[in-house]
Image (cartoon, rainbow over all chains, first blue to last red; front, top):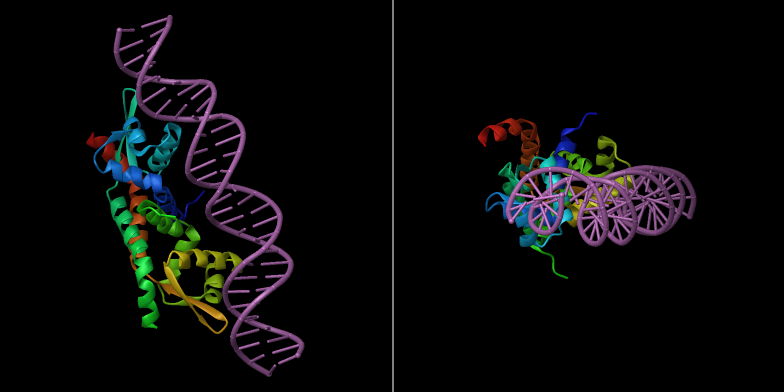
Length: 105
Length: 105
DNA sequence: ATACTATATGAGTATATACTCATATAGTCA
DNA sequence: TGACTATATGAGTATATACTCATATAGTAT
């Protein structure tokens, strides 16, 4: 089975497109963390968090490694923060550009 | 109802996170187009395309205006192309970084 | 071995998404 | 007016996603 470049991009964006996963990624900005730190910090139920992390690992947005019982995670590609920041700007622009666009045409 | 900044970002990313919507956006790079041009060009069924466009308009990723019977669309915020390009790089890095990461630690 | 801790996963449920076909609406043109 | 064209939307279906509770697995510490 072949995956188009559109699907590849969509898969990365889908993995990023959830409020809790965005919170997780911003939390990991502060350095590598294990599930047992993330769950209480972000108030996420254990199994739910585990599945969110699986999605992020599958898309190689974070990398994980075992340390005894714990599984640690860290950001694999810092560019995701550029994506998130741009998404914030686009979202923020939403309300404002409307007037501008109407004026332009 | 309050929408968190995480939700706002997730909404923008969700709107971008579909192969057909990515194709539509790249097609609109070539200038404003109406549904009746997009549908045959990308081989998308009419009502399906209509709903994809609705999603893009709702997130103000594209702007639309009527011209007689037609509804035209154009990109509202060029930064989405930066997001798409970054998503492509992150997706592309996936396969390659694995070795690097293992070497680093 | 036993108790404890951290994580993964099966199973169930609720909701969202993508898609299609049929139909409604609105504008165009003879 | 009637026929035609472009778009929107209701309804149905299939699939994906997020979440929870319960349970399994694996490593730690006594």
